[in-house]
Amino acid sequence: VLTQSPATLSLSPGEGATLSCRASQIIVRTKLAWYRQKPGQPPRLIIYHTSSRASGVSDRFIGSGSETDFTLTISRLEPEDFGIYYCQQYDGLTLTFGGGTRVDLK
Amino acid sequence: QMQLQESRAGPVKPGETLSLICSVSGGAVSSSNYYWGWIRQSPGKRPEWLGYVYHNDKAFYNEFLKTRVTLSVDTSSNHFSLKLTSVTVADTAVYFCVRTMRDTSGFSIDVFDLWGHGSTVIVSS
Image 1 (cartoon, helix red, strand yellow):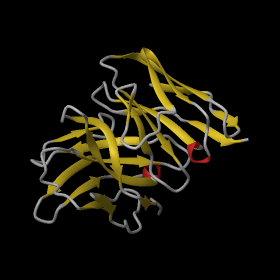
Image 2: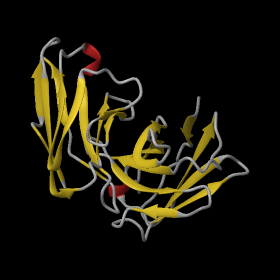
Image 3: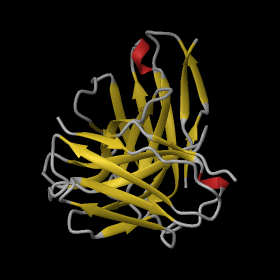
């Protein structure tokens, strides 16, 4: 089970954000990804292998962590960064997602 | 540029079988580079992976749904399919078809870098 915190972050453009994803079991081989979803759209892949940015993703997004604790740090928030962020593990036989952190415009 | 497009699902009643097709354009479902899958999302909930299938019809399923889910590939029509049996209202969701990503080493990894727009499925009597 993946647990994300906080549930909601209310921030202004230019601020930084720190999102947490905690796993109930150790995730080996860095098999943790992050997605962002906007209303009415499918999720978009942001980070894979814990810290590798997907194609076209800004270097303002930094993924880190290991074992059970993972973090997505977003610096200098821009308007397009707002949405719901989900983590996903792909270490087990069944792929699972976290409950999400909503990053709202303050 | 490859794109995925889900079919529309008609009204589905409890106990019936849900069937969806994902049409692939700009690429071939027969490619050995990717797995082709389905993820659903109920309103306000986290995404839920249902499974994925390889071009040779080898499929892998969510362990909690595997008795009800069947995925298959049709290389002649360049699409892949989802069947979900014995649906209930809990199966009401947006169903996305997806493609796994190839990492920089050329291996397919179990994250999804291409998604369809989604097909809304409502199960109701």
